[in-house]
Image 1 (cartoon, each protein chain N blue to C red):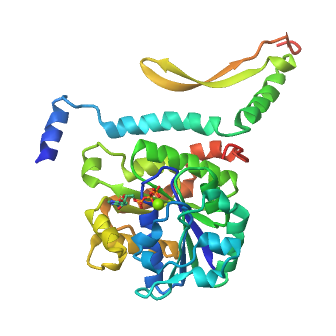
Image 2: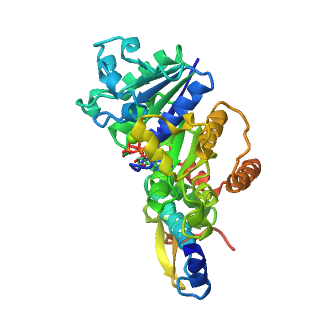
Length: 280
Length: 95
Ligand SMILES: Nc1ncnc2c1ncn2[C@@H]1O[C@H](COP(=O)(O)OP(=O)(O)OP(=O)(O)O)[C@@H](O)[C@H]1O
Ligand SMILES: [Mg+2]
């Protein structure tokens, strides 16, 4: 049975789609069968970042509405064996699917795929609820900025309120120079606040823009440092215990482990009171 | 080069506030409030527990318990504060 993982953030533009594209490609390169689902209805993007925009015939809403079989809508990526995309719809609105329908779809896909990665839209409204409905685990993408960390915290609260407590953290657009200059929250600072299982620190890298221009996820370019970073995240998702490669990452992994051992988790207590949230 | 200049600036006190530290402190404060205000039953549960503890020692009337988390300023710094206002009717027994 496959695992369903949602990639979410609350705040827009922090790198959910980029992360989904790279991790889906990476899992496929590692020999897994992967379905990447674009749940950003009305703002389809995962297709273009993956370079599959010209292959779309049917989309997610067609599948949910029963207009076509999901196998017909899934686009097979010819470059990476095992990678499939279920594109989002560009015209219909977010209310055209329900959380229950997405959950059912995930349960069908589970039987056929090792991993189902869901690209969540920004925000905490209907689109968010749809995206998280079928997920077993979540990856929170946060940049080291106050607004992004705050929104991540909100999203974690909402996930936990739904009983979803298996949440991982990727810190994106990390700038070591700024951190060393004490002008950016360090990965350690961010994780002190969010207290999740940190699975990656992705640097701010010009190459990301070039790769999305070309529609080729950067993880496939083995020569690059950032590709190695994504590959390690992929291995952690697959359950391997991979050492962090940068000194910053190295330091953090040890602190993280210690913390989990000692359960120094004062703020987490506060969250446990959140059992049900009607606002979102 | 820019980094060296920045470091010098910092050590000469021109720009001595480290924005990283400021960011962390502001976040910790705001999240305390966010977490409480977005939780449905945190305050209710908290109130009930406080009331039970207080009832061990004093009599209070049912409606008079007021418990809040407030922001306040102390020595120039903004802090989160637990404020409880619980009028006592009677002390239980002899102390
Ligand atoms: N590590 C990075 N380094 C440099 N640029 C990045 C990085 N991650 C993402 N970006 C850029 O940031 C922009 C937003 O990324 P992306 O579309 O993945 O975010 P998103 O969270 O999916 O946005 P939305 O909320 O709109 O769906 C893109 O231009 C992307 O190329
Ligand atoms: Mg996106």
